[in-house]
Each structure stands twice: as C-alpha cells, then as structure tokens.
Length: 142
Image (cartoon, rainbow, N blue to C red; front, top):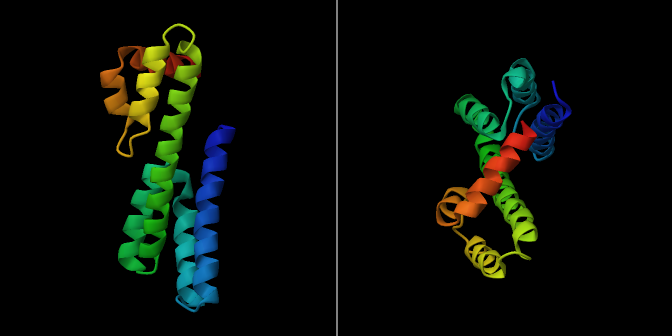
C-alpha cells in the first residue's frame, strides 16, 4: 500500500476515533456501541480507499448507529473543503505556468475559480488549456 493511501486510511481512523471519544465523553453513545462501531471500522478499513468510500461506509453504518449521522455530516463538509482546496491548487499551478505567456487567460481562470460554485468540470470545459494541463498532470502522476 502506498504511503498516501496509508495516510488517508489513518486520517479516516482518526476521524472515527475522535468522534467516538467525543461521543463517549458527552455520553451520547454507550461504551458497548462505541466498541461495536470501532470494530466495524477495523473490520472494513481495508475496503476504504478514498473519501467517497469512507462517506459511503459511514452512511451505511449510520443506519445501524444513529450517532454516526453527525460524523457523516462533518466528513461531508471536510470533503467539500478538500475538493475546493484541490481545485484551488490546480488553478494556482496552472496560473503560475501560464501567466507569463497569457496574463488574460490566467486572470480569467482566477476570476472563474474564485466563484463559490466553481468546479473542475466547468473550468476544464471553459478553458481548454487548463484541461490539457490537468490531463498532463494526471499522466505525470500515473
């Protein structure tokens, strides 16, 4: 398993552990239920490879363990923040690469990316050069 995936899995485990600790501290969950939830996570952690799978797993568990509903909301918010940060990073690197060649395109994509509803699909559709940049980055990381 690569180190990035291992770090993500550790982060998911940390989310669950902190949530359970807080739920136990505030007596929103019994020790027995916390142990059951922790065991379910341990039993299934190897099946979770990304944030989407983690959210799906928490959603399934929250059907049996209602307190996990609040963890799902917290994780969903974190996922949105992470998507936004990833988009901003991609735009930032693209702008750094292109600003000296085409300042107008760099300015336009920055303006578009700053919109609250900006997303990768919309930006790649509107800016073909950005789409090429993203594809090149994907190939380099593979």
